[in-house]
Length: 106
Image (cartoon, rainbow, N blue to C red; front, side, top):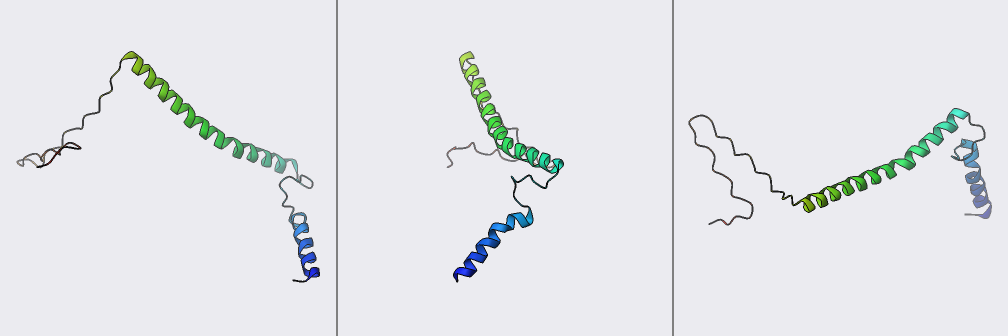
């Protein structure tokens, strides 16, 4: 590429934002509604990840606090029991129970 072509390309690329009015921080030539829309969009996009991370951190903190209070009170949490398997159609015996997780089979 010649020096003249490179200089012309650099000039075109430097002028492109002015031609398209695409600069996000240039406020000349824009009305107040557009500037307000950019401001609100920027605030929303900046705060959304902070609220998501903060919400997860708060939920984990609450859970840890509740578990610590339960442990201090001597609460013992037992695993939930599974509901029995329903019987088949009338006249047929109920299905055989499933073996417990980790049970030895013969």
